[in-house]
Image (cartoon, rainbow, N blue to C red; front, side):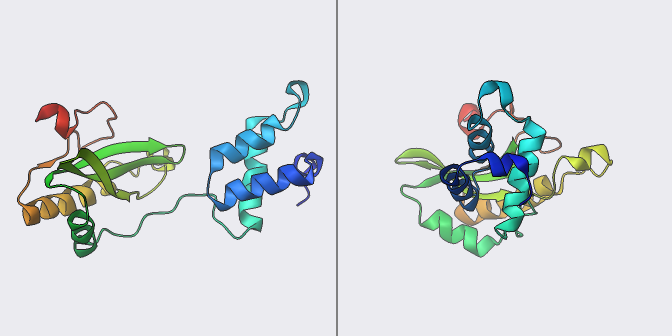
Length: 177
């Protein structure tokens, strides 16, 4: 790697950053690189992102998030059956990170009262917003279709507040039940 930022890091720091990358911990890797420098000579965020992205490539990993595999109803049903307690609802809920929007498919149980992430559905990054590729939101359509089928299979309600657009403030199933 030809980066002067990477070259300025000690071998121990480079090793620590690489270990974070191998575990796909992007933000901690970015922070580790930046915090290795004194505040007055700390590299900028975009420069640091370039360094971390290059390390991902050199380690044979992908820095960009790709689409998740299509949801498989049989596999999800097995996950629900393996949960502790009785499943009382299936929910699809918007989430997002530094790569864009996604939908979490969740199962709610009553004993113990908990929510369990069954799958994450991601069909593209936020660049879709700028090139006019959304709406529709294909991750929402897929999560809604499979989530309803899963809920029917277990005889429980399905909940997806705000399926038409990302909404982190949409009411959850527990808050509406």
